[in-house]
Image (cartoon, rainbow, N blue to C red; front, side):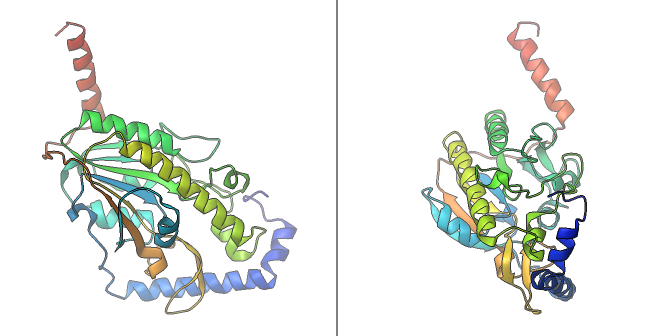
Length: 310
């Protein structure tokens, strides 16, 4: 089914009981968003003030699903996120901060909103590592960049932002579902109908299949994270930028919610895992931020030095 056209079949489905329920859900979600805009919602954790050397951020990971799926050794707690979607999470945690003791490796498209020189260095890998077959950045690419950063910046904290378990679904089961994706050249999603909207409006996708594919995505990214943790030192924390709604009840208007709408601060959307893995601590120190061009020049100079030209 193409998400860029409205077929007669899709219109019939939207006109069904499930479709009408989806419309009510959307309207109720909008009302809830306006309600939360009027509330004091600045209650989430400021992640940069927590104690860690490596902060592994999963994207759109529910606390309950993480607690059921994760088999790594560590201590599981939870935190309340400052955002119900990625852009808000990044705005609330990074914008206006001076994080010159930290390197940010990210596949998230909203990382482009972070001002230059906020971090010591930002490795935004979205365009470089975009995989057009799966419409996202695979976990393995994030791991490769994170391991390189750990080697190059041994005295910096690392924030490593994966794109899973966020759709599109990339596992053997999930990749057969048309789940939408992100656009590597913008902050927008692709023109496919997102899986959460298909579920919301009853457009031919069973909830059980969506949950299966979501858990599969989480397993895949946790396997990648496990390999990364074997190759970097320091105290590590696995968390998420926000959760994800899969038909959970919202408040104060008790409609069912889907995906991760901005300004909706219900527990299923802002309660995120905080999973700590102890390790040998690194000596962290802040330094002047560097740009990609400066890093490339440094690499060239090192190569010339190795060749005996400097």
